Image 1 (cartoon, rainbow, N blue to C red):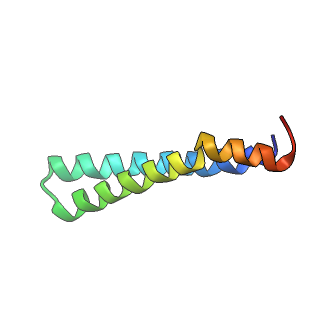
Image 2: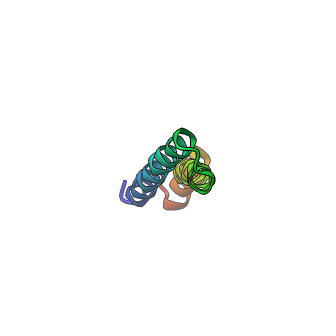
Image 3: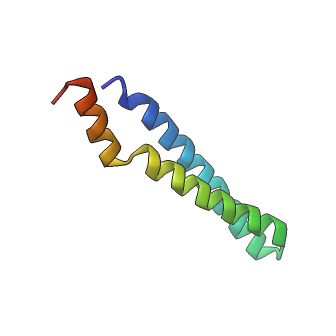
Length: 70
């Protein structure tokens, strides 16, 4: 259980990056701010990638085999 805690922290950071990207994307669309929209889209993509990589079920299964727990 202790090895999964850092993954949850990284996944929650990814969610916050995703939410910030969503805010900047919507704000850029509403007020027609191209740089803000583009950076918001980048943040959306990066946040989603961080979240998915951190909570990848295959990586968790490999780490459980490596620890010897079932």
